[in-house]
Length: 119
Image 1 (spheres, rainbow, N blue to C red):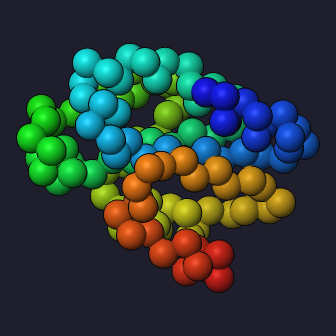
Image 2: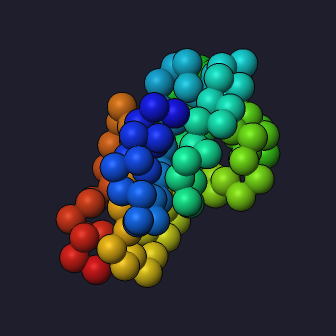
C-alpha cells in the first residue's frame, strides 16, 4: 500500500499502472490474502499476478482469481496467472507518459522487461 501510494504521490499527473506478483509463502496463502485489502487503491490500473505452479511447488492450497479480487477489494482489479498473458498485456498497453510500477520478490516468472520496453 505504501509503495503504490508513494509512487502515485510522486507522479500525480501520470497514470500509474501497478503490477504486483504474489510470490512468497505468505502472499500465496489464501488466509493471508485479506491483508492486501485496499493496497492497490492508489493505482489507476491494478494488476495482480501469481503462478499456480509456484503455489503447487510450495505445497499450498490453490487460490483463484476470484479469491484474489475479493481480497484486494477492488472490483476492477486485473488478475493474471499466466506469464505470457501478462507479457502480452504489458507489451500491448498504450503507454503514454505513464508509470509502470512492478512489485515482486520474484521475477514475474522471468518476465523480460527489456522486450516490453522496446515494444
